[in-house]
Image (cartoon, rainbow, N blue to C red; front, side, top):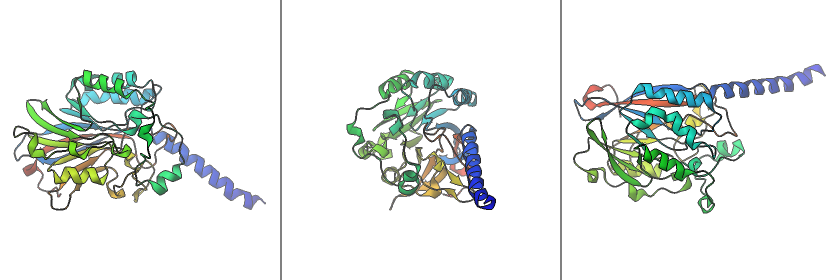
Amino acid sequence: MRATVAVPLGLVGAGAAGVGYGWLEARWFALRHVSVPVLAPGADPLTILHLSDAHLTPSQGRKRDWLRGLADLEPDLVVSTGDHLAHHDAVPPLLESYGELLERPGVFVFGSNDYFAPVPKNPLRYLVGGTGTQAGGSWNREPTLPFEELRSGLVGSGWLDLNNTTGHLDVGGRTLAFAGVDDPHLELDDLDAIPPAAELGPDAELAVAVAHAPYLRVLDRASSQGYPLVLAGHTHGGQLCVPFYGALATNCDLDRRRAKGLSTHQAVGSEPSWLHVSGGLGTSPFAPVRFACRPEATLLTLTGVDSSRSSSR
């Protein structure tokens, strides 16, 4: 009898230990450093702080303190790729957590959890069916999160709203051009909002495409329209990963291999674009664990193409 009972109890104990570790890892924030050879030869470096998927609730003091400390990096530009919120009252604490980052040039797009509060879901649906869209008519519902309050707070601080539109920013005396789409996961993206990069003006040193979810239709559009750099989030890096194997799912149609970090994407007949997918800072409050996938922000250092000959696209 003892041997029969020991195995199930051992499995329960191992499962509990795994969940406990996953809970701790979800609070073990990491700052990644990535170099991207995307500027003109000989250009001075430019730094971008890429934030995504904070999924903030007012009670997350550790996350808020860590976010506030990122201002010490003094990035040239901040890019937020959505899913800022996970609670109706999260906008004031989010803006307070961004703190001095809001004084720097910044751009943003929205994700599904800027419109709709997270709800309990069966995690097996994510692992088994995490390649498609979740729209399913959900936009016909009334949004449950204060996305307009969030928009007003970010725009009022000087950040550029890129939801289905284009824009320019002066970043330390250098002009950057941007094109962005609203959340592809809710099928709110308007691909016509990503025009040919050349149409954004000859004075722009770099054209950047921004989206929350890295669906292939958006990546193909950005590559075919000549954007050298694309930034996205949404995947949480897989959130639950297997060591030496990686992400089990991406929650979109992007392949597992590119669930987070720097890679390239090339549409047929186009030049490749650099793609950076943030592993994100948070989780749904109903799945507050990560495994082999620490929450993260990334400091991208953009360099001239001649300074990184060893890097291959």
